[in-house]
Length: 226
View (cartoon, rainbow, N blue to C red):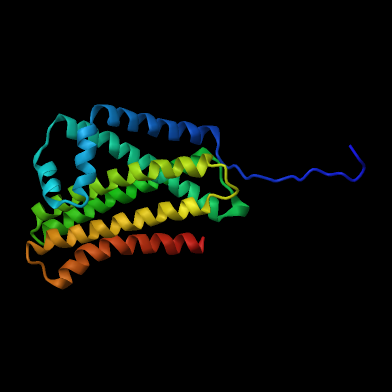
């Protein structure tokens, strides 16, 4: 080697850890089991996002494949969403990268608490406004959208962890865009369901917009302040 000859060094920030790989691999295994055993249900699930009659048919058909396939997709949703939130925090906080698995499980617990709490709140409002059937139909649609979101976020979290790029920020933005697009479509579906009961505009705003956007806004503000 000649004196003064220095090879260029490119540092690559790889925040993936062994335990996170195991979590993602578990989600892939669940997806493979659903894809193999309940392929028809998955096809109807994605179709129900844009076809209301398909959504109603799924609501009425409470059989074995739908129940067991839905349970696995629910688990995939909670796993992948928690992983995506964990990765997003690490991407945007460069100087404070967190790799402790306990922090991921804390996020997972917060995600479970948030969605189960939101469902209970919807049921309380449904009982208060005498719209139990419409509320349950909306919650069924919300579950369908969440299951679809979990499947769409699964390749996103895989790319964030293993894509050979210097920074996966663009991939994270794609995941955030998917999250908000599906939530806007769900909000439109909820408005359509509640308008069938001839809700007033005030109750509609209180019932949907407040419960959907206010908690997310509070979480976002709290995250930015921290």
